[in-house]
Every structure is written in structure tokens, then in C-alpha cells.
Length: 164
Image (cartoon, rainbow, N blue to C red; front, side, top):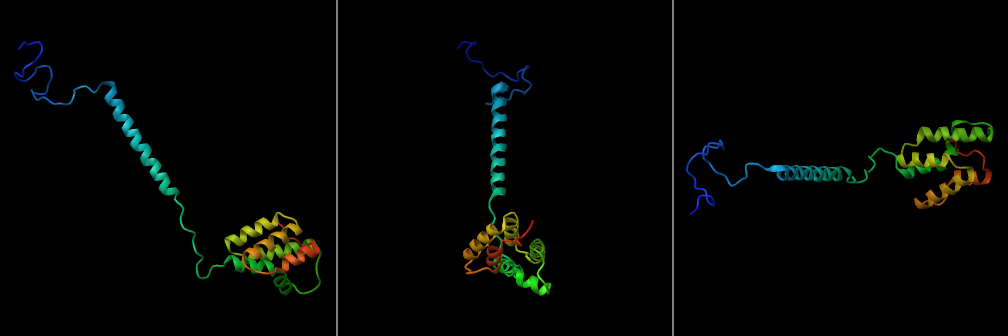
């Protein structure tokens, strides 16, 4: 055997500093090994972040109203019958149409607590009287109801519409 091709272990190598212990792992990773380690670390961090974001973004089931909370149907009933509440709260002559609309809005803002009912009030407040009546009829029909006094009054008068 020639000495140039195969090197025999003869004891500790003075230049290696490992005390003659050989390992199958290369001593120098060079530029490829460190890039590979960094790439796999980044990939892991990216995947972990993605999974975490997806887990946080998962839809929670819709919360059911608590026992004492107002339902949308109850809020819709208050909206449709606001004139009964207004008349009992303020007996006497009818005021002008703008005052009627403001009074209806004030009463509903005080009494409607359902988030969906509040949303409906917001949507109604940016529409004119006839559009309010049409939207109310649509919501009443979708909820299984048949008529709405406020929708009928708004269609007949178009005055006294709910205000923002």
C-alpha cells in the first residue's frame, strides 16, 4: 500500500486538536451546511407561524343568546310596535314628522339590545321612509312574521322615518 492513498491512524494528529478521535462528520460545514441549517430553521418557523395563524383564525361557533338576552325577534317586535310605545310614553297631539322620527329613534335606541337588532336599526337609519318600510317587511317575512305597524305607517306617510 502506498502511503499517499491511504492514511493509517497512527495516533493523535497534532493539527486536529481532537486527540486522535475521528468522526464521520466533516469538520467544516462550509457555506452549504450552514445555509441548509438556516433554511430548515426558517422553514420550520414559517410552518409553525402558518399553523398558529390558521388555528387562531378558526371560526368559533356562533354564540347563543343567554337566557335574559334580547333575541332578534324581540327586537324586531319592538321596532315594529314603536308607535305603541311612543304613544304610551307621550300622550297628546301628534308632533311634526321630524319630531316623530326622532322620538321613534330615541325609544328604539334605548330599548333594542340585540346586536342584530342594533344592526337593523343602523341600516334603517340611512334609508328613506319607503326604503325603511321595504327593509322592515323583508326582515319580518324572513323572521316568520306577517305584518309590521311601523312599515305600514312609513308606507302611508313616508314621514317620521327613523333618523341616524
